[in-house]
Length: 415
Ligand code: AMP
Ligand code: GLY
Image 1 (tube, rainbow, N blue to C red):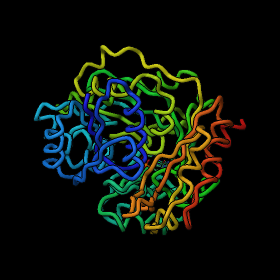
Image 2 (cartoon, rainbow, N blue to C red):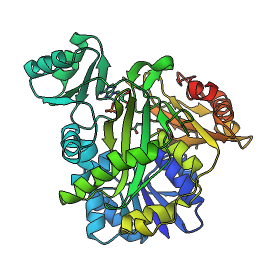
Image 3 (cartoon, protein in one colour):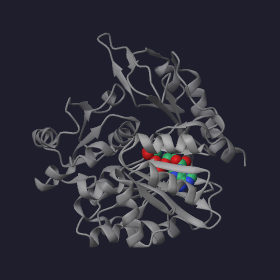
């Protein structure tokens, strides 16, 4: 089968890596891709937000499946003309992608579906925001209503900072603070059948010890040895299936990847947010452990035949990924710096480098081209070994001003 992947981050590199290892994939294309994806797929320069361009490319390539990776094209409706043209596509329609595109919409869906989440208010004026902040008290949680690449959320005990963030957004969701460890659980769905993947944990803050600003994600690991038994089944029943059923009931079925960001609070599991696509960097570790060839799974979601899929097979190994970000990320990432040591990082075969924001110059040198630059991934017999291997890879890479966290999976590996 010929597969076209839309996007160009580490998530898409992880998807392309898995697809390139799937014997049923005869041709692999990616648009626009990046310097690392170029090693496993043919790249095509398209505007990924332009549905007509993406459709034209898919038709030209004779793609049997199009996988739309990032949220921006999904929210922009890039999946819709593909589906209308009868091309199997992995990724929700524009209306269904509002589950990620609008926090207010997702709160509404959760309320209708009886899905447990933080209590919240939608506010459009400073007065409403102040009232909502005082209703919940500190710590304050203020979320930009729209898409913000994981950076629209401010969690702070500083009331002035909370008010300032609210004032900088047109519409905000202010909600109660959820205590407890976070889990990312992904499910593949065709709009009816829901197939959960293995849980992972993401590290959202920029600095060690969960300090610093929120980012798109600085590292991840899977499995979660500390997670309660039965977590996946519980979330399937109380969160994933009801949400998919509610969107189908509304006439906007959600097909693709439903990502539940969860907090395991003392009062039970609560949804922090939904995303409408594979998470980054969690995908890197989840796919590192998936043994079932990926293309058939994504195609079954696109074709509406997930009910016929064999149960997924998983490796017993643990996986860890560590993100290398550029200087100044997330506020003002600096780009255009050469990256050294990419081959050395993979030399002993235990770690591999997934590219996020990279580009090749005329001489074939790889340069940083975004906030998150690389995601160094490794598997091992347990988290400690996977961690050791991933960090050994990170240690061989040099990027001027590059930053990474040193405590990804540390607590879970030593618990
Ligand atoms: P989101 O973009 O909604 O996932 O938020 C990004 C991060 O902010 C989450 O991963 C949490 O670490 C934090 N966060 C969001 N909402 C809450 C909440 N209600 N209580 C505590 N932390 C939150
Ligand atoms: N890792 C968080 C996200 O993908 O939104």
